[in-house]
Length: 444
Image (cartoon, rainbow, N blue to C red):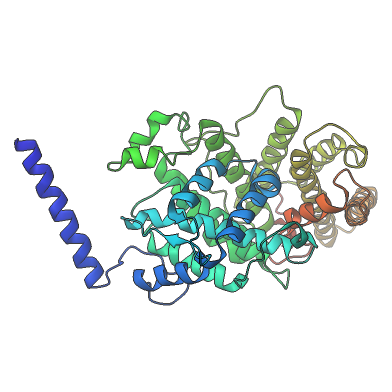
């Protein structure tokens, strides 16, 4: 009886606290992306105005993401079975007027469910607005892309995800980062710089939820960061394999950011799980080798310690050896290999070929610096070799992109467009940050 009394008092206090916060518009932990005040009633009104009349169009695009984009972009770690269930429970089937009914979440953190749905639909709109795939949709989507993205950001901020950390809020951040700053970038510039703060938030959430820790994919690990609503959250929990694939994805993006921008690696393997290798999967193991190579380049080149020309030459040899494992016929010859996995390897190879040009340039600049100090030093053969390697790498990148857009790869025309979106955010040589902006090498 005493337990029942205390439980009743606790529920009453929680209700009073929520009512007071709503009355005084208190969202002290909310992250406001849009710059506008976040009001729950206004957000709910926008959901009912934009989503409810287009119920079937939203549902159709969720299926499109599940069938066409989830695998190639996110290795299927977005749990679409859960997302589809949440869509059906959050929005009741349309009535005779064709308008669905939105069920207002009982707690703020559950708005992350809606944020993920909106983010996914927004991403699908970005992917399908120019390539003619709108013909596959029976129901046209009447919402403007900018309204979708704005609403998704408002709803995610409303969920106060920094206070109530959930896997679905993390997934919303990941999808929004890709959609807003990479795929919906008209200028094709500053994708990495603009999206990096959001990626940092993703890594921070992974740490705070224990996703980085060995064994974090176990269902029992949910108890390590959830104190309430365990049953609610377990019904929304990703599978162990999905959690591992998500952490692999975070490691891959961290390595790409570090090499491309010169930022420190955010993931330290002394405290985190390494890339989860699958011994019977050549594509995943080759992907892991590529990520480890990018990390090796970052740890060497971005370090504040002095490095030698020999250190850079070793990295050049490693990059050439890795690219040699991925001949172009692998991407131009029809095979039974996983196309999504090949697309990731294609992206890694292009990035490493570009990095190879920068490493060669570093060697040539180092030789030039040495000559200014010792005119008798003869390293012409080294400079000639570096120039040849750089030229061949640049040509290989151009021919690869030409074949991709010409539909001459295993990805074909339609898949080729999806791979093109996967490559967006791929840095161009001569940038101002990271290894791609370096014009010198520190040597002893």
